[in-house]
Amino acid sequence: MTGRTRRDAVYASALPVWPDLDARIAAAADAYRACRLCPRDCGVDRTQGPRGAFCRLGTEAFVYKELLSVGEEAAVSPTMLVDLGGCSLRCLFCSEWEHVVAPRRSPAVPLDPAWLARQMRRRRQQGARSVTFVGGEPIVNLLAVLRALAAVAPGDRLPVVWNTNGQASAAALALLGGVVTTWNVDLKFGNPRCAERLAGVHGFDAQAEVARVLAFALRDGAVDPATGLPRAIVRHLVMPGHGACCTRPALAWLADTFPGACLNLMTGYLPLGPAAGGHLRAAELGRRASAREVAEAVDTAAAAWRRAVWIDGVPRA
Image (cartoon, rainbow, N blue to C red; front, top):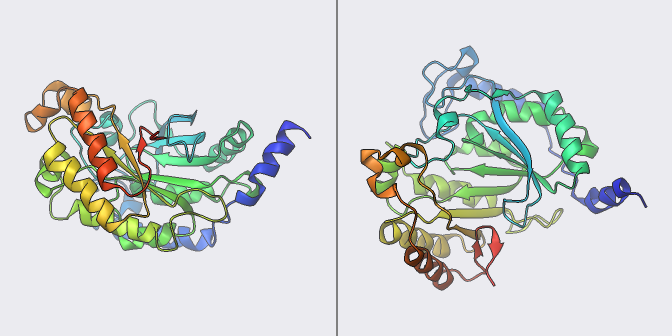
């Protein structure tokens, strides 16, 4: 049996179906005419260009990085990682800040369906178990992603991991149901004050938005039977000075509300984006989390979580 044949045998039962893509694309294009796919609720006609859209995007998506990654959660790695510009939040500690505020910034190029089809075939042959759309925020790139997926031959498809900030409307979720296998959701904050100050959340409840996404992801159970992949992964970044206000309440809420999700506690915070430059609204984020802060966060997660906790993507021993 050749290497290609062995890979095909391993993944044959995991080939995604992605039903009704043409209908989903048409519905997404219609939604873009008065876009309310995220809680910013802009109502902008993005088919006419990005003017007035919080995400600064029209109908195109812009890819600024693509690679075969083994650095995501072990359950979905290796994964074909596709980084897309634009976002619905403005997190002052974002590692991708330049591409969030300027989606077309070099080296970004428009997401080309033919390119995605070729690259997915190549990454599958190299051993990718999934394709992860991240950013930035893939929700604001939904139409272009659906159009690109439609170009992928059925035998080259990979399960879709949607790495999101969890800020998505019910309409956006409906367009992605049956297309996304794993929802990888950021749970950033434990209270609205930090969400407003550090991510620019105004006029909506970021945690309630995350709850909507997780409820949707887990509506048919915690594991996708066709692939064995988890349907919901929740990431929480341990930020310096935010143990009491964010980590503890966020993890307690998650454990009580969505015990079926997989929790990945991320401990490698680095001061990046505006926080690295001493932004006044993020002064406490200009340093790394201390060893004590990380240890307390790990203990908090272990005490709150009924299932195994992942630390930086790897199940805790």
